[in-house]
Image (tube, rainbow, N blue to C red):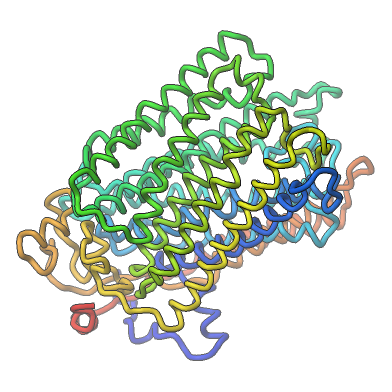
Length: 634
């Protein structure tokens, strides 16, 4: 906000592919970064989905030799790691970027530069992990990377796991901090915490979980890195270390991670169902407290992943009770969603179908979670396919159904066009039926004794039928994903244009502005006077939300290439550390020099960013008025 700032006219992008590429490499606009996160998640979803299909092909018949031994271990490890860290997490951040600033009436996020840096760290972290296929083999120690197996006994693939997750995790932590500060400090006038939309509330609690959970993973990965590259001895019992420490560190991160993924999907469901029921969310206040309580309890239950480690009956009992307690606030949410639909004018759009299907599917995952929370029973279920079925009912049945609901719901707001409803509904039924056909039989496979992570079984083990059904179901899910891709391509080619209030039933602030949102989001900062303030204004007969300020110049940040260069520097450093690891024979000094060079380049980028005098630019009042006039009715 200085006299040196220039105007929107000087910010107009040049034509051509390189100019287009430069725009996306340097953007700090939260809406564009949301799209980048969505594209990144889509790319890795395709990779993780192919890996899932390879697993199901191998297990479809007994004694199959399609994918065996270490190759199978690599595919299983990469599937789990990719889907959790590089699909679900970035998809969540896509919606946080695309929706949260709009829902709270903000023109931007608190730290646009850090927001861009967070994306590029995530994306390049994913590339570090996936190039392992072409550079000696992918990690094969499972997505939990239990030590000392992962530190002392497996090949270079585990280095890609450690460095890839370390780089991506730094980006996620930055994103969490950014959205915490944004939600606390940048809400529109009148938007008290209790007037915040539920999706923003879940984003707030999720960001707090990230703030406390990801540092544990960061520390653990550094310890694994030191064990592998520098011969430290944190986890190898034979040399005085302790592998149980890694399990504690991983699950102190790992269990909150489940709710880092699930809570925003609860928020999406809490937006979709009231909109398409034309009713206010039942029990808004109780939903807020349930969200906070789930976030708190998420940190109190990590030991239920370690009942069989031998921590004793007292510890197991305490964590079992804490685990079961999560069912209470979760149950509040389930009943409130149902009561919201009760008596409402329910519209069965594709988004709402996914939201409604989410409820019984997630309940089933929760019920099997309570079963696993009983230590005596967990001793029987441990490391069986019952755990696989439970996990996928929570993560796919809960998180993915929620993400698809959000995708169809907010696509018009993000891109200005509607996804095709007919194709969407066909894809929905393929996905829902395929999902249950895939994972429901796996409960019984687990109860019949099928272990997880095994690549084959014998013909006489009574496991063939269940596995064949499971593989057929996976094909149904794959067809649904292909239909979604076709839908997106068709929509971009000739999709129907969306208005600002795309569904005609919008309740929150993002629906009060054109679709897609202009660069500055709100020409005038809105004045929030209630929960669902846009709906209230419409019911009062107002065409626009009451503004909190007159029109004026709007200050915006400049784009920057430095976030990309900093992420690239850390990528160079990561490859240096990966090739420096010559397990058992010492350290490769040349590769270690590359690692130090990468860190040096990153510090240089930080110095340049600190010294550069960047004042951003202004969108002048006249330009705002002109764009608002063009956007009226859009």
